[in-house]
Length: 338
Image 1 (cartoon, one colour):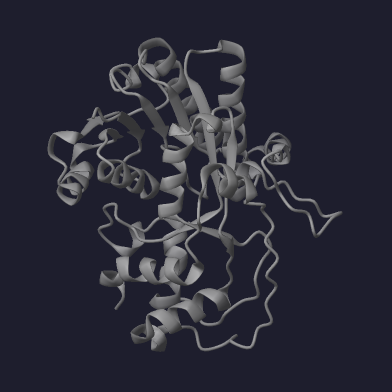
Image 2 (cartoon, helix red, strand yellow):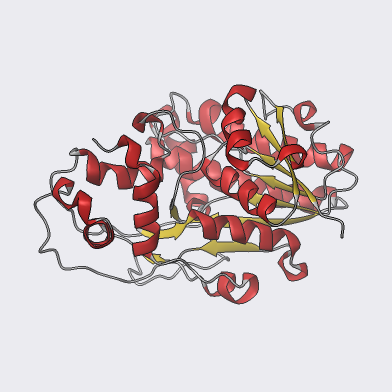
């Protein structure tokens, strides 16, 4: 039996590492792009996959020449790498343009050099869909939604735009660019896009200290660090998905014939301060005394704003529940809990 070979951009990232792990467990050959081989060594030691796992340095994902060699000889490409930080000095230069250019450079490299590539799967985000609908508080988002309003705010406010809006705009515009590339270039490969909400679940990538935890895992850590004194009411659009389901969905989106040309919301359900704290208290009782002391009498709303029907029906995702996701996240970062 011949196994597939995949390229994962940003393989040392939270999501990228899980995609690599699941592919390797299924017998695939995996090539991952990294910014430095030093960070990659952790994954080589973790996976112990020998010749089936290789990493190559790509220092600038905005240049298509950077991907020219790495896209050769692979069957599928998972484009996970993208800028993510909330305090840009310039929304265009720090977030929007790098996200768009990184996507276009990868797709261009596949078009020109990746003659064996069957399909590219891009890690987008629910951020590219969650345009506010204040006129309809019961609005349910589907794969037909786009968050074009975020980029309009960037254009209006420039450097004064809030960092979170700049990030939302970068995800929306990068995904728009990907579909535009497919429409205009009509390449020989197919495209699918994954749009996860907040991603929880165990961290298997290299994290040297708590300050290096990715944003969503850090959201769990704060319950155990003493930094959070009281539980707050649930905010709108507080939905989660486990990173292992995100990885599975990427692989299904790459390999299932019907997933070509599709985008998929990934969401397992709602989360809140109270639900997370309760999950930790129940599943990891040894940390109960570290939880916030106030706010346990909150009344919760449990409306699930994104519709995950398409991912369940077409990709066959059976979502990991919040309790397990939170418990496994906590255990994976236990070394940072004082």
